[in-house]
Image (tube, rainbow, N blue to C red; front, side, top):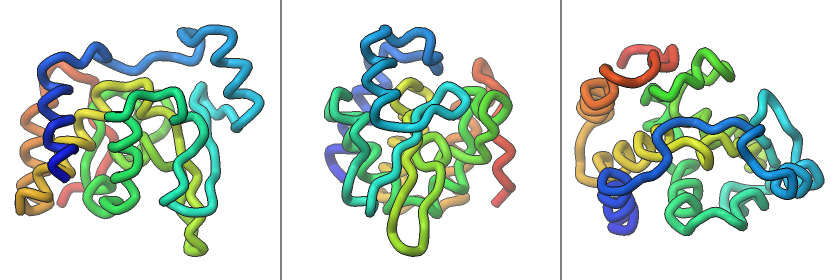
Length: 165
């Protein structure tokens, strides 16, 4: 998880994504390519793979740091379902936690329906990376939730309706 710690630092220092983009902000070529591969829902792309170890095609053109976060998310499902997101996705697309920014559904069979929302949103990526790194450092879910809430409670959108811990 050392690479995720480095990602957290890189996000804090120079992340150019300050919020969530919309599908309209993608080029026509990107839209056409996505439409051939996956389903669009509320402006986000969803793609199902057979397991969490198989990343979706929409990540192919994404930077390594985004791919690394997506690869880690399924292993931290319980943690990220306990973390709110502060990008406004609770209101705009009905997310209930930070986990929803990356995964729409995960079946008992192991298949996973990925959501590309996180690829377009620096807040989503930062929260996931910070939570995962803090967990790896031995912090409790409650401590991590407190850190996330304190960090994002001002100057960001209202949090997702994630239940209290």
